[in-house]
Image 1 (tube, rainbow, N blue to C red):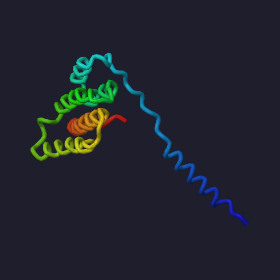
Image 2: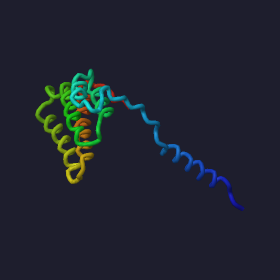
Image 3: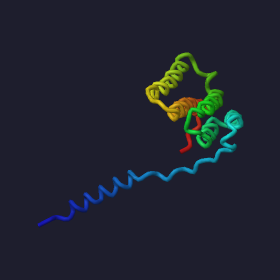
Length: 141
């Protein structure tokens, strides 16, 4: 006689795993506040952002996905570093630089301008992480 409970248990496990693996709904992305063809205005807006997180959101909204993102990433880093750089001790500064260098190594052997963009995002993400620690602001999800 075939028992139905093992089948029911297997089905329940499969259903739970499928539900857990389902993608989360994407958070709505902000629109770029400037025409994509005006990178200088975008850089200024990033630099004037009220928070580091806001500057990162502008970067994400305005990114080209190419080497031009380096300029935007540098603006984010500049905005975020205002929150923490002056307060870091020598050991913390070395840790910060080591994390940034890890971004460089991550994409060093890749070719194409999109990897330059990935590196810029990685650098900006490291600066954002340090800013969030310094300001004790939980990241938005």
